[in-house]
Image (tube, rainbow, N blue to C red; front, side, top):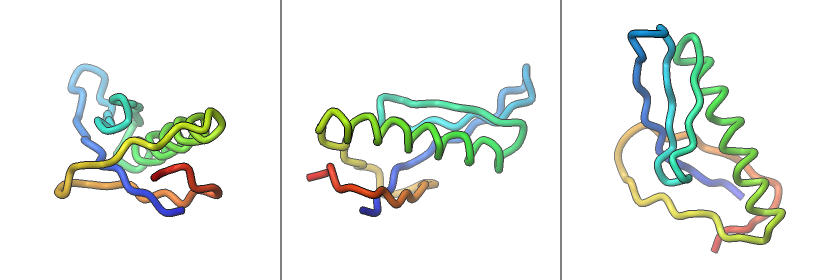
Length: 81
């Protein structure tokens, strides 16, 4: 199953880190030393969160945003409705 979620990126001047947040998924957030690392880390965090929902047989939250930066994930099993 292919799913997409909007990611909001910001730069933390204090730490020099790039922060990534997915509002549709309970505001899951992660960071990295640059955009590429932040994107990799948030993708992994989202995958783990969705796998947890699958294990609990819970529906995936729906993404309502239509503009912005999105991550696209291919999941093995369909739990979304």
